[in-house]
Amino acid sequence: VQLVESGGGLVQPGGSLRLSCTTSGIIFSAYVMGWYRQAPGKQRELVTTITGRGRTNYASSVLGRFTGSRDNAKNTVYLQMNNLKPEDTAVYYCSAGLTYAMDYWGKGTLVTVSA
Image (spheres, rainbow, N blue to C red):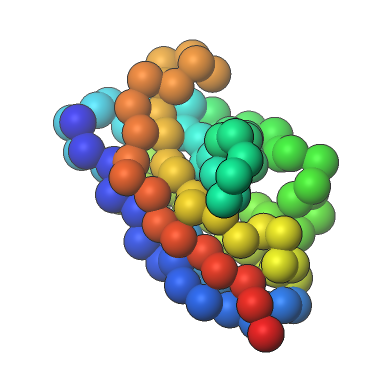
C-alpha cells in the first residue's frame, strides 16, 4: 500500500494551495480518506475526512477555508486550502482506513505559510 502526497510548499498568508494524494494497493472507493497535520512541537491533528461517497467532516480551525475531495476513478484525494494562515504551517499527511481509524499513512508534505 502506498499513499504519496504532493503539492506542499511555501505560500504567503491569504494564499492557496492544493494538496494531492495518490494511492495504490487499496480498493480506494472502500476507504475513508483523511488529511491530518502536525505542526512543529504539536501533536498530529485531524484536518478532514472524506468517506467513499464523499461525505466530509472538518476540524473547526479549517472549516470554511479548506475543502477535501476525492476522485475514486483516479484513486486520488485532494485538499484545497484557501485563505491560509501562519498557524496552518505543518506537515500534512494523507491517510486511509476502512473505518475512521486510519490504517495507512503517507510520508507527508510540508506546507509553510509565511510572508
